[in-house]
Length: 225
Length: 248
Image (cartoon, rainbow over all chains, first blue to last red; front, side, top):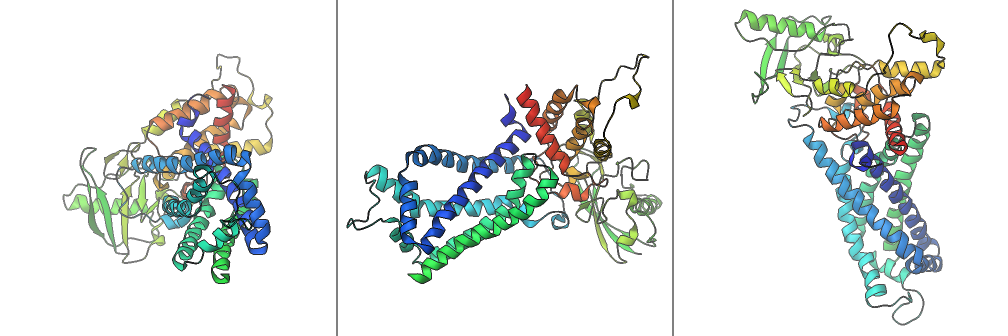
């Protein structure tokens, strides 16, 4: 396998593999977040489990961080390489005649998601790391010790309408990214067209339902606070 | 039909090149696009100007030489055709048509609309063949049984004429549809199995070496391909490449 991941096709596989992991992560993230709409207790329990279980924290979390960084860095490297592959641009290029807007602008939807991730990390991930690993408070409890803090922290973040608007906009870009990215990952991994047809329908549904669900959660907490 | 043409003019490989406007008159809608170019060149020669250089050979959709990017699409707005099969009835009287050469770093412009596609030849030479002993004891081709399905799929892949429309249409100037078709036509047949591992590895290595971009599955190549080569061939090449590296 030496040199596989340096080749154009090897990098396609690597992008697809990181995409599969990120799409799986997104699904479980959504599954836990939607609990906050139906049952604050269930959301607190699930969040505490994910935030303290060693396999999630010390195995899956590093893989996730690596996956996110790899997907973005390799995405940029490939974009630069691809732009260099055409030294002179066309005076007239009718891209919409043969391909979707989403497929041609993955770098821009990706950049929007990256900008969102910075905000999201500042909002949730960094305070979480600070509480657990710098202050050493693994209890997951509120300051007064009455109940878990996760639901309170979540709903508190969605009070500010500007933050809610930023989240909604980011999920629109996530949807656009997944519209092409889902089926593209399977095509890169060499999945045949027969199965691809069904996957495309499933992928479109995933690309709409998951981001729409996240938008619903953000709006629900904003208007319910 | 009277038309305004915006054509890329470049005197040689080192020239910077620029778009130049021309007027052509009395174009029949029954003409092919190349015949329209012939009329333009006749007008230019009569005026003592340098005719527009463009590649063409068979003029029946087989040679794949006509490397023209017309109004933002490889071989123009029609589907499943090369430039010689594109009829002027696809345009309207008074239209302005932009004509450029196929653009890719691996397809350098030689002159005007003529590009050097020898990078495709080098990819073919890297593994796009099977070694057959033709010393007199050659086996009858029919002695090797091949399913109808595999034969059809291999033939579909083999219809690639290497015109480069896939590269020209791809936003990344990727050659993966071409290489995918060339890998597939042998991967699907028993005769191609013996050299399968080296073939895909060497052809992909040469493709990367030539400076083509990476496929991001936009599907533009499949839409613009005059022979309808499917993206399925890229997926098959990816599988072949993966298994070749695992077998190593």
